[in-house]
Length: 262
Image (cartoon, rainbow, N blue to C red; front, top):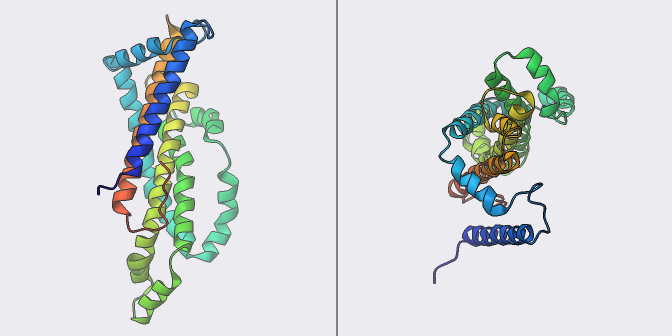
């Protein structure tokens, strides 16, 4: 008997739910329950969204946003993972830096846009910096807590065979922490995309999805284009999250504590 993939079932249910919502909103709009001037018909918005696929300007903006997103995420991993191992393996360092981490972590990256505008003349560098700031925390915290979840018996067993701290870290701590790091990166990915688009929207700039939305807001059929662009931003977020979930499941199938959240 073929076992049904629960991920496929959730995707099907999610697609049916979205389709049902669109049908209800379309019917409400055509019945006059929703003012089409305030919120266009779903069919009109979907038509605009499809048309954007052939819009070179919009595709260039998407590429710019994804470039800042990917660059920021790569820098985040390069910084947050080693920092997480440092704080997670050296209690004195963690105790010294924990107050700083807890002070900086709640500060919204969006609140730093005015400061970033004054510091950075290049908008791309500004976007990447704010993405790194916002995305660092989930990767850092997940790395630290992943290290605390490592089986102490496994570490002691390796030490009893004469392995030093670097070998224990490489052979036991890193493999055990990897699923937590992957989850942190997946969460950071969504945050990075939100921050990149929000920075483009609030901080301005010549390119990016946020800049496209800002420019479209003052044009003809503004609402239709704004909602269509926002829909594509949501689709990009869903696709990237699904890819990270799929990678986690394939790479860490052995990990019993792996998350099942899509």
